[in-house]
Every structure is written in structure tokens, then in C-alpha cells.
Length: 191
Image (cartoon, rainbow, N blue to C red):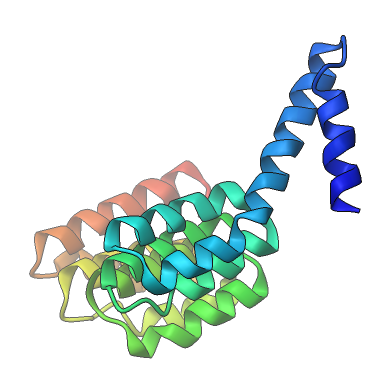
């Protein structure tokens, strides 16, 4: 079946219509990306840090269930840099299973990875995540606390603004700057 699809796409690549050629080219790229998933998984297991990072960023281009599958595999990487990048890239697919997997990782992470997970959860704007994110508002790591402030503001809605405003007196300047960013979102009417 895949061979017939590829054969048809090759034929459509020579179609007289530019729109058909463009669509066929995009479909061919997607088909090639799907075929690359097994080699990408192998790279995640045995590749260098740079190679594993390239897989994470190509997973978004692969998209769909295959891309998410690669990013889930990257969330278990031994390097925080790879896990953190995977957490950020997963923002392209804020489905319930993705968000649940990220919430499940929260207690196991710290630093930039934890911050990136919170950031991705916030971008989903799912109100049910606000109580989970709220737990990280007073995190001792300023980067984590700052990302928690913005994420909480995006998920909590009007009921949570008092908790965001309380962070304006935080000792750390990056947390206070995050409060300002959160307030900017609110003033735009998006939150």
C-alpha cells in the first residue's frame, strides 16, 4: 500500500498544476518522515547529544502520532537538555494524553526541564491544570517559579489572579518579570 501511495505521489509531483505539485511534495515529505521513525528511535537510544537533539526538533516536522511517539521517547533521555527540548516541542500537540504524560513527569524533574514542562502545560490553557501548576509558584528555583507564574496565569483564569499578583513581591527579579509578562497576557484579554 505504501509503495502505491509513493508511486502516486511521484506522479503528482509532475502534475501541471503548481498547487497539486506543492501538495504532493508536502505529502511526500510527510511519508519520508514517517519512514524515518525507526531510525530516529535508534538515534535516541545510541546517538550523540547533538543527534538526539536533532531528532527532538525533527519530531515536530514529522508530526502526528509518530512525532509525539518520538518526543515521549525523548522525555526519558538521560540528558536534561534533550528532555527539556522534548517538553517544549510537545506544545505543538496539547492533547489529553500528552498533557497527562507531562503532568506525570513533574515530580521527577527539576530545573529547566521542570520549567519547560510547566510552560507547555500553560500553553494548553486547560483550566484543570491550574491547581497542578499552582504548586510550583513558590518553587525555590527562580526559573521554575517564573515559568509557573506565566503557566498558572494562562490556566487559572480570573480566579487565579490574586496568586499571580502575590508573586510581584518575589525576591527574585526573573519571577517578578514573569509576573509582568503574565499581566501583559491578562491585559490583552487572552487569559
